[in-house]
Image 1 (spheres, rainbow, N blue to C red):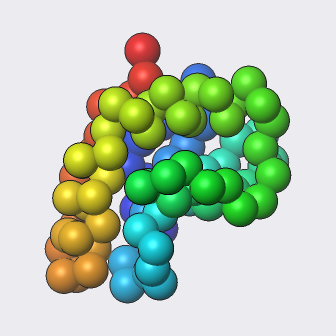
Image 2 (image 1 turned 135 degrees about the vertical axis):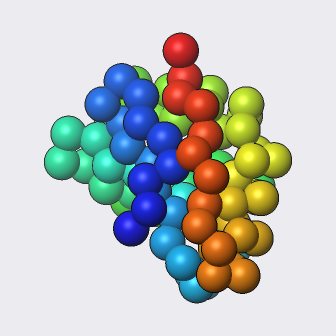
Amino acid sequence: MPQISNFYGIVIYMYINEHNPPHFHVEYQGYKATVTIENGIVTGCMPRRALNLIYEWLDLHKEELMTNWERLSNREAPLNIKPLE
C-alpha cells in the first residue's frame, strides 16, 4: 500500500483501485481508520489527538488527495504529500 505522508507517527496510505467514496487510510500506534476526503468521515478507531492532526492535514491537502485518488484510479503511482509541520 503506497504511503503518501507521515507526520507525528501518523502514517497516511492510499490503495490502487479502491471503492468510492474517495478516502485514505491512516495508521497510528496500532490504531487503523479510513477517512473520506470530501467530508472527513472516519471509519475505524483513532485517538482524538491524532484525529485532530489528521483533520488539520486533510484541510490543507484536499486537492492533492483528490489528485492522488484520480492517479490511483488510472493505475498511476500516487504523489507524496507534505507532512503536517
